[in-house]
Length: 164
Image (tube, rainbow, N blue to C red; front, side):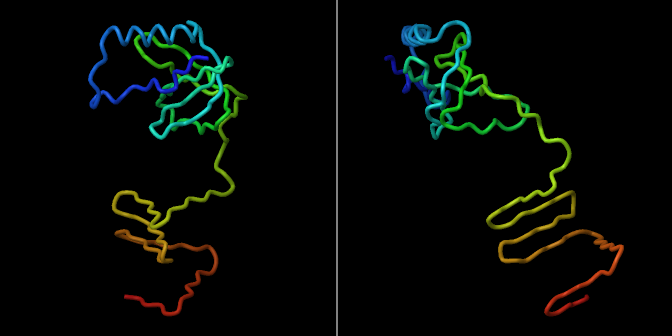
């Protein structure tokens, strides 16, 4: 069983480039376990640095990078997910192209209910106006002009109501 788990690339700004011989040795080791076509593997670990550790069918563990796209946030991955890996010329680690599974279409329309949570302050802001919901129970509405409309009765309930 070959274990390339600790084959990690250091950030470019902190690492010295490796020698051509070392890069060739890594590429040869990678070519020995990954064929030129994409392969499936199971997610074994998600490192704190974002490295994905994939487990091939023969027990080989590979440290992998994730293929980032501009289509939004990366999908949530869970240990045991089936992944599609491919070797990329010039890289020392394989790249996870995506998760294999059934297609789940995006939700159509607005949800029936939406909850946003924050530990201290939740702020909605547009231009010079804002709405702040604070953990201490205070609600602050800011704007040049504040207009409140109601089709039915408009009630203000409070311990004290202060106008101007």
